Length: 515
Image (tube, rainbow, N blue to C red; front, side, top):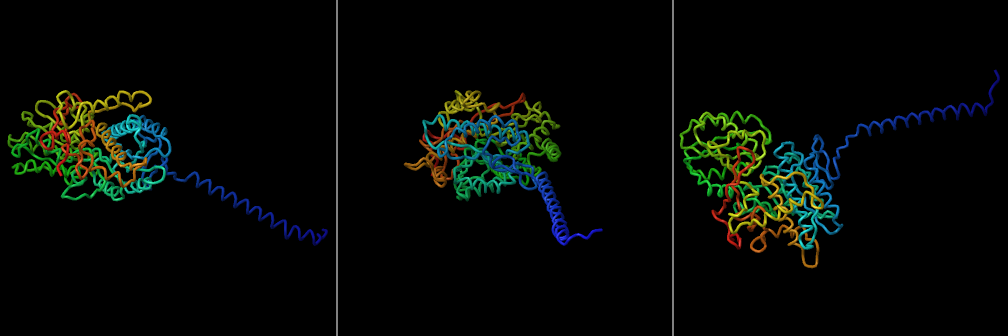
C-alpha cells in the first residue's frame, strides 16, 4: 500500500474527519433543539381566553376584563355582547370614559345566567341612551365586562386589572353591577373604593355592603340604587302588617351578607315572638342544591306541629334554598292551613324557575317578596311622587327599538325579575355621576371627582329611574326608594301587588333625604 503524503494525512486526519463530526454534532443539536421547541409549542398551556381575559392557574374559568365581543362561553349573552362591541367601536379615541359592568359571567347556574343576561341588557340600553339621546353631553360611555369568577373567587386579580385601567386610553371611571351581596364581593368593593374607584351597586341590598351603618363609611365612593335589606323589611312590614305572634323565621346559618342582614331585619320585625326560629345550613356555593331539602322537610313538620296561630313565614335565604323550601312546604301534611311566605328580592329569581313546584301555589300558600323593580309598578294608580310611568316608558321605548339597528338586537328580554330595569338605572346613575363631575373647560372628569357626586343626587339633581326616583343620602344610599311587593303566580311569572315604602309613605316632591 502506498504511503499517503503528509498533506493528505493532515487534511483527512486533522481537518475533514473532525469537521464531519462537528457538523454531525451541530445537526444533531439543531434537530434536538427543534424537537424541544416543537414539543414545547405543542404542549404549551395557552391560558388566554380573549383580550384582557385568561384562566388563572388551576382554573378553567375565564377571568378578567373583556374589552371585545367575548361572551364567556354563554350563547345567551352573545347578542348583547355584540351590541356593546358595536357601540364601543363607533366611539372616537379620547371622547369616552370606561365603565366596567362587574358580574359573575362564568356562572353556570341557570337562574344566575338569566340575571346576568338581563343586567347586561339593561346596562347596554343605558349606555346607548347616554351616547345617543343626551343632547351631545360628554364624555361618551364605553362598556366593558369584568368577571371575578362564578363565586367572585378571583376578585383580587380583577381589581388589579381594573385599577390599571384608570389611566391610559381606557380612563375607567366607575364599576357598576357587582352582583350578589357576598363576602367576596364585599371584599372587592372595599378594595375598589379604597383605590378611589367609584362603585355603583345595582342589586346589592345587604346592610353591611353599604355606607352609613353606625355612622361609618367603609366604602368611600360607593352608591347604590337598591334599598338595603332593612329598608326592604320595613316596606314589607308596612304592607303585610307582620305581627310577632303569627310569624316564624327560617334563616340561613351561618349566612352571607345578604341573608345575615335580612335575618337581622326580620328578627327586629318579630321581636318577642314565642315561636323558635328555624336555621338551615346550605352549601358554601348557595347556587348548589346540597342537602337542605332534607332540612326543609323537617322544618315543615315542625311548622305543621305548631299552634294554628302561625300563618306567616319570614324566609332569610338565597333563591335556590327558597325554591327548595317552597317545594317542601307545598308537600306539607297540614294542607288545610294557610301560609304566606315573605322574603327579600331573591324571590325574583324564581319567576322563571323550572324546578319550582308551581302547582303548590294557590289559596293555601302564597309567596311574596320585595322586588328591586317591576314593569307593572308604575301604572295608572301609581303614586304622585317617588317615580313616574313616563320614566318606565322611556325604557320601554328603548326596548321596542332594540329589535333592529342601530340600537339592537340584544336577544330576548324579560322584565318581570326586575334585573334589566335595576341595571339600567344603575348605569344611568353612573353616567350622571361621571358627567356631573366634568370640570369647567374639560371633557373628562378625574377619577376622584366622580365618587364625590353621590351626596348631591337629590332634589332637582335626582335620577329619574325606571324603578323609581333615585335620591341618595350623604352615604350614597337611596332614600325611601319604591319597593314593589310581588307575588309568584301558579301559572308562571309574577304578579305585581303594590308599591311599599321604607318610610311608610312616598317621598315628598322635593325628594330630599333628612340630614
